[in-house]
Every structure is written in C-alpha cells, then in structure tokens.
Length: 87
Ligand code: FES
Image (tube, rainbow, N blue to C red; front, side, top):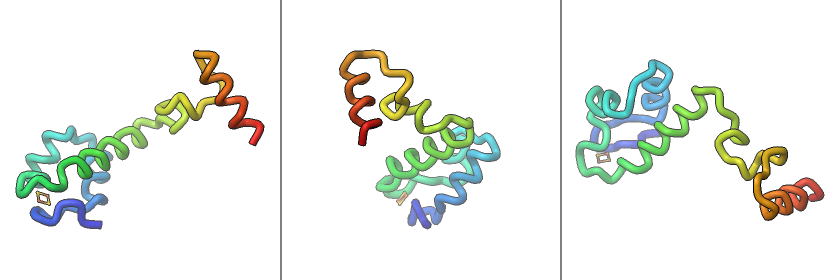
C-alpha cells in the first residue's frame, strides 16, 4: 500500500528499510518520504515504529504491559488482568 503518494513510498519499502537497519532520518533522506505535502508523516512514522518494534523481537506483551497478565504492578492492573483471564 502506498503510504506517501507525493513521493510514492509504500509500507513495504518502509518495512524493508527497517530490516536493513535504517534510521528514520536516513529513510527520509533516501526516499524523500513525508517531504512533499507532509500529510503522510504521522502514518509513515507509525509504520516505521511498528516495523522497528517487530524487528527487535519484542512481543506485544513486552511493549504493552496491559497485555502481560503476569507483570501487573498496581492493584488496579491486577484486577483488570484477573477480569481479562476470567473471560
Ligand atoms: S503524501 Fe507524503 S509528502 Fe505528501
């Protein structure tokens, strides 16, 4: 899917850049993504960040503590996790 229509950059190209270890600034320099009208900037960065998080081997539970039932730190979190488990 094309993320940046001004510079014709796809989500696959962003994900490929992450796999190659590119930083956001380098990706922008190489592709010129988000340097036209700028409308795509937030979405493109979000795709970049998600791809980077996935490539680093983090699971969703590690990134989002609310999904990790065993690591609740507050009583409220523990109650929420117990409710979630019982569903
Ligand atoms: S759509 Fe990406 S800069 Fe315009």
